[in-house]
Length: 175
Image (cartoon, rainbow, N blue to C red; front, top):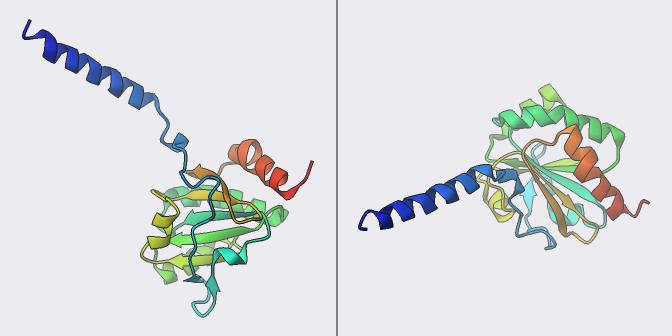
């Protein structure tokens, strides 16, 4: 009998572990969905004399992509962002997260710059306010400045076509 209690506790722990292993960490919903984009005023990556804040993209549907030059997955999604920027469907703003300005500028020079503007979040505090727990992450912001969607991980062509662009078009008022 005294072995049954530890055995039952162990069995319950195994069940919870099995359930947890089947969950996709990208499916964790953001508590910021439907709420205003957190405010910030940061210098831009390209020019520290210019700043970027959510007021710069208010009044339009926009993507905010959190990226870093040291991020391997960011390199994977970068061609997708470049192609999207060339299509001129939606402005893409960057939030350069915990990076060095020289490295970020070098990365954009080497691989191309899809961003309308990119803020420089050297210490990562703004990213934390946005609920970022890894890069890359991409947010869809509506015309009122509300976060409507968060995509965790690299943006892929499939994620664009299935989730992001249909929402962007809907928010832009397209049929």
